[in-house]
Image 1: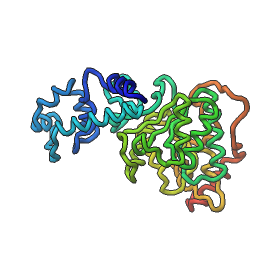
Image 2 (image 1 turned 90 degrees about the vertical axis):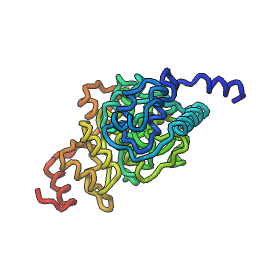
Image 3 (image 1 turned 90 degrees about the horizontal axis):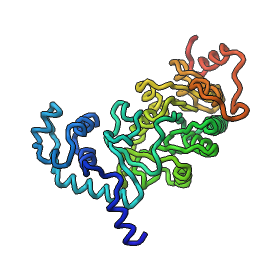
Image 4 (image 1 turned 45 degrees about the vertical axis):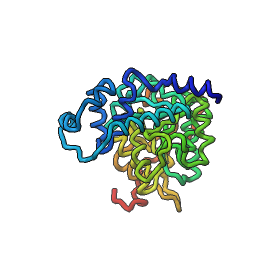
Length: 338
């Protein structure tokens, strides 16, 4: 990129509005909860509006003392640096109060006040299917994840997942094979795809017309707590969530919990409840015992959503002829009396 193009990029930032860097500054305020940042976004209309407030004024708005010290000038400088970095790296950011912010995410509990993304955010008029599962799937689970994602894509439905190894990656690949735009939510900054081996997959998602999304700024490293946090965004963006296969204490179960909390349909793929020697599926089996419905193919989902199938044939693992036998085998695996 030559100097002229760099200048044009930095002086035509789509992220900036009449609010200037106000929303980014609020996003960066330390010691403030997510819900409180949303409240501050609604209270102020410009940087000047915020800068004339004392710390005591902010405490009155939030109705609590603020123990963390901050220097608004330093935070403003950091906000400017992030905005410039985003522009240089083709990363966009949008705040909660923008019309571009995904509506379903806005309505979720504890939505991020700002999200960063490359590509194009999902069309709010089209439903997304959340698909997650173990990073070490069985062959059956990998195949079913791919087939469901592929066939749901042929009906015009996109998948949102976490770009992790295993079920996430297979779900992304199957959906992309159908030609549908893909969506991935990361547990770190967009400029540092993790795992690095999935960078080509991230590029395919962008080439598909989809997006890679994060609540973290460029350069932010993924950590133990960031992956569970990003799961709430996967669930929030989805109309329904499908857990393909999950062992006991799987991270996918965190997504399931968020789905239930957010009032989403929570489903389990049929491969996730089959008893199989050497494969831990206790997580998905427990979800079914707790009330999650079993999904056998993409057509099951399309029927629930009243969407006409746009593919021929079923992508599937056949339904058991005797549901009682399935329940019995699941109970034996979990050592539960039924």
